Image (cartoon, rainbow, N blue to C red; front, side, top):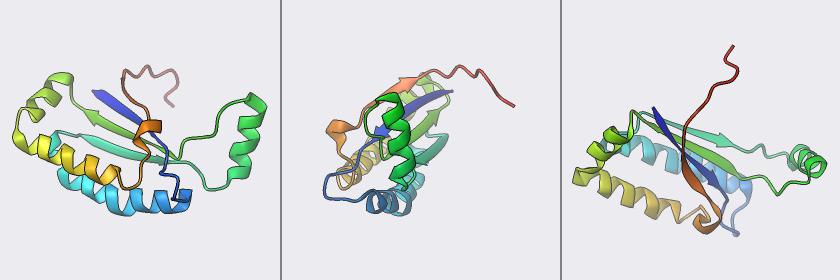
Length: 124
């Protein structure tokens, strides 16, 4: 399995609550609708808690930046399976629809994404 990780920051005019509500209730179902065309095997949204007090305390102790508003994780069987899915026009059309929707709530310039390889250290 391969995984795409997308660390999300909301557009400035949205509160974290508005951002997460839209992401979960509008964008999530849109991803579900188009997942088969894109060959997506798993899609998970990881939402930052709305209680900034706890996040701020952790950030201050470590001297780190402000937390992302959430993380999207998408899995495919392999890069070959991804390429096969995207060789069909439906996948490209679905990706365009999702990107258009992402522009409504994600600050894309401040939201990095990358391919990952997992190394499980603890799995109880």
